[in-house]
Amino acid sequence: MVIFEIYIMNWLQGFYTQWNGPFRVQEEVYNYYQLQGSIGCLITGLFAFPIGIMADSFSIQFLLPASFVFRAFIFWSAYKI
Image (cartoon, rainbow, N blue to C red; front, side, top):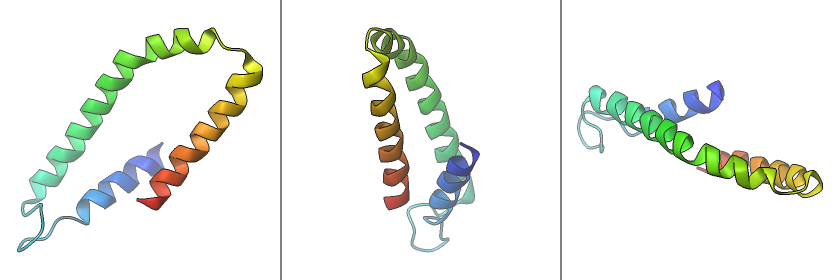
């Protein structure tokens, strides 16, 4: 997870240039980083309980392979950004 957070920060830093980028002030990069972290925590807090209840109703024979495929898709998506 730490590697993913470093990747997001470096990705946002790539948009920072003083003359012609979407982020012209370094503080904007930090603000967007804080914003995505706050929104991510809020969404996780809202959806963790309902998704947990739904996951408990499925069989482990289905849920375990599905979670591995989902995790692989997330890592692949982050790599393709």
